[in-house]
Each structure stands twice: as structure tokens, then as C-alpha cells.
Amino acid sequence: MRLAAWMAGASALSAGLAVMVWPHLVAEIALGMFGPLAETVATWTLAEVVYRQRPERLTAVMITAFAGKLVFFGAYVAVMVTVLDLRPTPFMASFTTYFIALHLAEALALRRLFAADGSGSR
Picture 1 (cartoon, helix red, strand yellow):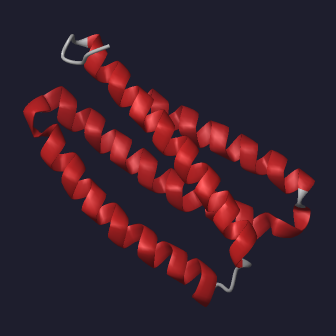
Picture 2: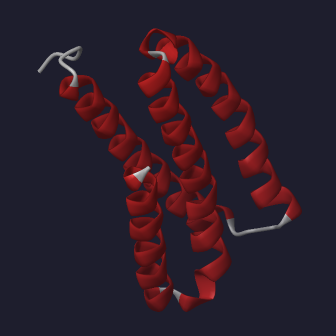
Picture 3: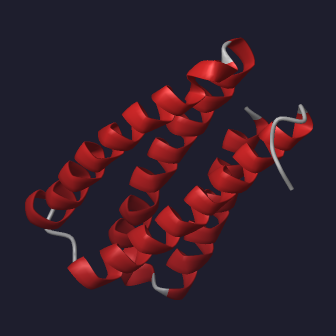
């Protein structure tokens, strides 16, 4: 659960700094951050709980979560660009940056989780 707090804090801090540089892009930066952050925190929290309780179920849960991510992100981006009428280029720049950074953090945390109990390889 500590990782979720770190991801949220680092995302909020970096978004705040980006908004200081580009104050006219508050909505694009914030909403570009929010979707990937919410999804990554939810997925990490779920993965951590499942791994602690029933590690053999983690792969199935992550595959199901991946399918959910496809639907969620497709709908999220569509709503942000069409319904909320955000500027596509700055929104997608923010979204892509947070998506990659947060998923990298999640992947590294999963690697550390597996290595902690000896089930992962280095």
C-alpha cells in the first residue's frame, strides 16, 4: 500500500510542477495524470492483496485486470477528448507520460515482491 501512496504523491507533485510551467494546460495535465494513476493504484493494490493471500491466483487476476484496462482506457481517452473537449496533444502527452512511468513503477514493484519471497528470478 505504500507504493500507492508514493505513486500518488509523486504524480501530484510532478503534475503541480508541470502546471507551474504550463498554467493554461491544468485540465489536460491533471486529467492526463488521473486516469493512469487511478488504474495503476487500483491494480497494484489488488495485485498486492491477491499475492499475499493466494499467490497462485495472481496471473489470472492480472490477465483479467489487463482486459479491464483496455476497456477503461479506451473509454477514458474517448470521454476526455470528445466529451470534455480537452486539447488532444497536451492531454495525450500527459496521459502517455504518466501511463509509462506508473506502469514501470508497478512492474518494478512486482519484481521486488516476487524477489522478496524467492519466487522471482534476478
